[in-house]
Length: 126
Image (tube, rainbow, N blue to C red; front, side):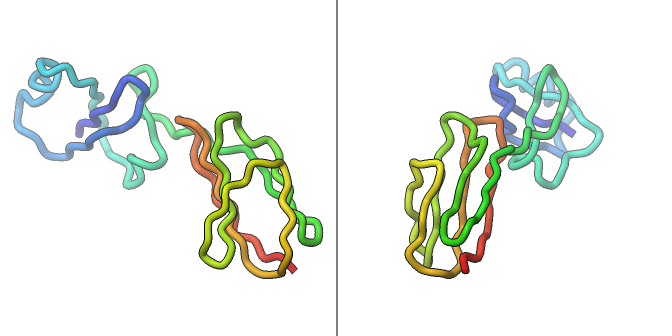
C-alpha cells in the first residue's frame, strides 16, 4: 500500500491497489510517498509522514474549564483559530476566556496550525 504525501507530511492520497511500477511513476513525476503494510482508516485526519514513517499527528493539549458561565482556555497553541458555537452560530474567540449570558450547550473548536490535531469540546453551561 502506498501513501502519497507533501513536504510537510500531509497525506494527499492513499493507494491500496496499483499497477506494478507505480512507485517508479510517482518518483518520476516528483511525488513523495512511502510504502506501508496497512493504511489507517483515519489516515487523512489523524496521521502524517515524518522521516519516511507514518506517525500519529500530535494532539492539541489545550484545556477548557468552566466556572459558572465563564469558559477559560489554557495552553492554546500559538496561531490557533478558536470558535465558540452557540445555538448553531459560530463566533470567533480571541481572548483566553469568554463569559456567556445564557445557560445551554456550547461547542469550543480549537484549530491549531499543522500538524497539531483539532480539538472539539462540547460543553453544557449551567
